Image 1 (cartoon, helix red, strand yellow):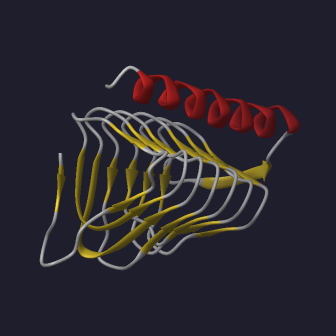
Image 2 (tube, helix red, strand yellow; image 1 turned 60 degrees about the horizontal axis):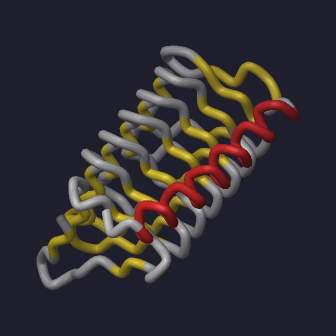
Length: 168
């Protein structure tokens, strides 16, 4: 479902895939080759939400906030994540069921582990690996984590193209 709200309509790149079972409302921009999967909710009612190119918002994620949200390019957001933060940089993996609270900022080339809770206003520097409740910086992102992020992004770009070809 893609709906306008308060005079604002989503702007979705022609190469993007948005599942019919997802919900995109209001002031939302979704970039080239990005995908929004079943059960995901992207609610741009209070403010704008910008999602870059080659991003995946997996099943049952929620993206919403009281201040503008910027999600960079090549970002993979795992199943059930809650994104209520201000910024996610480029080349980032957000693990399944992670929660990113108000005004948090995730730098470029980061990994936020599954089930982590990134606290309100937390700033994660570039190239960080973050895990825990509350989330703490555990070190730098490893080569294998970087490869897994890239592989996930590429696999989902291909999968979304297939879904579009099959008319889903």
